[in-house]
Image 1: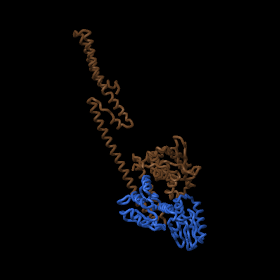
Image 2 (image 1 turned 120 degrees about the vertical axis):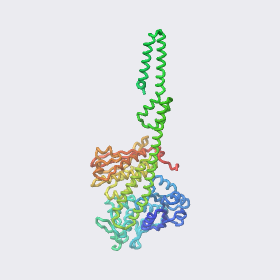
Image 3 (image 1 turned 135 degrees about the vertical axis):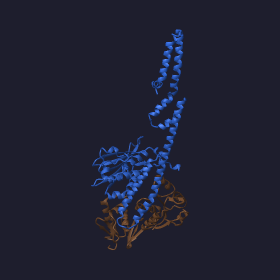
Image 4 (image 1 turned 90 degrees about the vertical axis):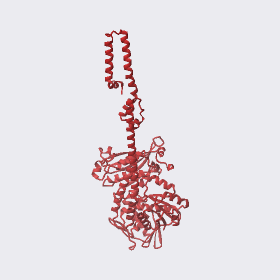
Length: 226
Length: 355
């Protein structure tokens, strides 16, 4: 579980982002007052910071530079400013990543995972757990009943999506989109192959028929039947 | 105004002079003036009539020439009008002053219009920036809500997004300033980014994406010099079109990049975006980059705004790139964008050091 400090002034986006990160297995500190930056960020001792640029009373670019002078914490700028100049400025001021606020939420999470992985060798892990099955999305490991297996990148993305649905059906389109966001531009057939590989990997944990096919609808994770 | 025209303009005065000379010639001899005296008087009269006439032509010649150039409506009429030298005779001075006040008024009007366009562009930029926040909130709510069938809402959000982007880039295309930032980016990372952000659309259309042509033999990808954000929008328009005009069976979009004439002054990279869709008819092909042109395909598929490819060409031109198209009906369409590689292009965009 990674501690994320969220600096975003729009209440709706802040609440939803916090929820998204929590669902992904992170612990979130969302700042609501921006008068004492970057001190409040540092006080939260985060593993990574998600920073908006347009803040009331101050500017994210300034905060990024001030933060960088005191800490090497991984910093993602998440903004609706979309010009190349803004990106270059943010990176110059010390941000490690620059992501559009309007990006697909999966993409935001993928970028954050990559940032955490890059951060340190002792990267704090983000763990999803569901019915005894635990998935570490940063280390790409799944564990169940004391056993641990390593997952390929595609297997990880598929299992992560299925676990997020908590037993609900996940459409093939959703799975493919999740794979595409991590640069695996698979087609229909490859997805089927990847799902079968995941089944084999999970069977090494003793979960033989955990991934259930629903014809024409998609897949779901059913741990109680396993 | 040539001399013949000047004579025509002063015909009455010329006629009066001739009558005067004829009258002197006819009357002086009968009045008892000697032949020599008559000739002398006639010579003096001719000189007195001709000199002011020719002088009048000479002093207005330059100004008249300038006015003729102005009347021809050359490329920069306003600047030319303002550069004309003031003539030194009363009628000329008056018309010159009138012309200058017109030119000043026109220039002020055009400055005002330019400022209004610029203000509007800035407003659209701000507006787009503002609208993205609630849109992001909705998208996050959909991702967080475990409700079934959010796909349809997501699709509509994506459509809103693409219209919002179009408004933003249309506003940018009207700006006289260079508000882009040129960088060198590998073709594959540019294309991947563009494909990733349109993943849902491509997946739902069952499009196969072929990017194998983006890497050359040694595993690297040709470097393109452009503003990556602008290029993402341009690629997005081409991807959207490939999806919209796809064929029912095995629709495909392929991306490839190559370097041509490496090491020469004409060194350039080419990015090619090709599909196997319905193609464009020969009659429509020359006009597809025109603003508001929808053509046969646009009419039969509906929802064409005629803005997408217009913006593609306009933005490419602003960045110093050229775009071309080849297409065969029923076979597919291929767009090629040419990126000149010379380093001087970095100078054209805004420089970070100027901030």
